Length: 530
Image 1 (tube, rainbow, N blue to C red):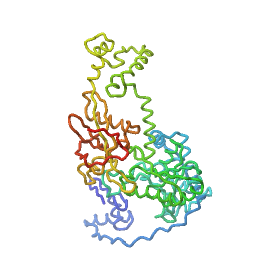
Image 2: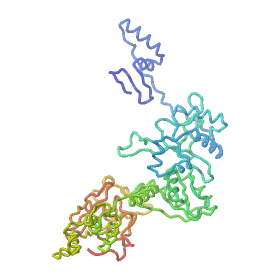
Image 3: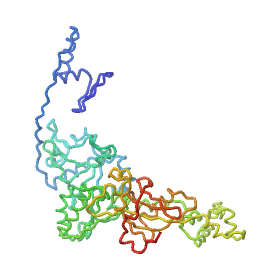
Image 4: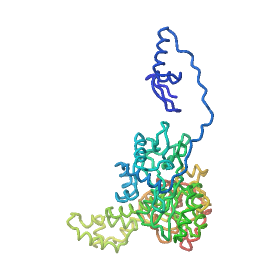
């Protein structure tokens, strides 16, 4: 309990009680405030003190388990949830998040039924309206009888956020989940842990309540030949909106109990293949890895093929990756054209490509920029190009300003069953896993190539360019994943060899033993010597 003797107020972290000194005295004596006031006055008038207080022994007996009821029918749950959501709105803040951060249109937001959680003080009134309209609340997850004997629904200020409906393959809403505005952290959670982001609407621990049942969400064609399985209905909805493909979503990587019934139905309905698309931390988190393996086993049990989907590890979820690809295309269209010289020094074009730049300059001469400036050349370089200055050759002049940097990429060897704690994680996670340096024996060489760069370009800039070059679209001969945290890049040449661990924000110099690393079986003879 916290006591503020300056303001004469108190607050109990245990029961949530609070108030001034009179309220505390009354609570300790288990009397009313008026009785407490009279008792204190009597003692003060006689010059005495309040009687000695003896703490009451707390009842440590285990509380009786809240009485649960039988789950309502699927149709009743859908009817109640539909009527409940119709009485809610979506706040501008939540709409902005879904539009800007999640890439959804207003039509898609409406289609998926997202709403904002209601204020706690309206929960009882909304529930009363549902009952008056003939909706069933008993047996519907989230509804319960409060201490006053009234039906209500379980929403609090602490659990405010975006409501995400979980819709079954038959189109009925079977559960509600909240994406919390503020993740909930446990008192013993480490400082770097984000906390719980998603919370089921459930009332199993409340009188007349019932558990969520962890239903499976389904979006897309019920007769789809291929169905993707991921975690989280929000993720599935976004991925479906971006690709048009069919997705099933569990409430979390470990919530696979309801997948069996769905897979049995899909198998009878014509589905031939299940694609496991759980988050990429399935390679570093053993719990997620086990959940992903269960998807494979369930698919096999019901006679369907199953394979694992992996993507650019810089994006955790499939929705993040798909949105990243869309943003990358948008950025490429919006970015200003780099001048010819900068592109040439970086190896992005040849001298023969200069004619196209000159043609573009002629088409937009009204911009007031001289041709040599447009191409990025100095006067000396431009004169050499026009052969005005015959003392030096243009090709030699421009070629002397760039160099070729050799580099190799090493990536962790990952299997479908064993999780590596620092896979796709930063150098801090590497150290937490007990390694001071990357364990080269757990890595394999996936690329050996070179990159052109300006003569004086710094190593970190070169590494950043390699990172962009080896993401999503790869150089010829590259047989690895997109370059991401936990990968090791080697820069080598006449000046020796240097190794860098790809961190979550840049590259960190490390020691590495390439002789211990394996060679990707797909690399073949594409790797050059050196």
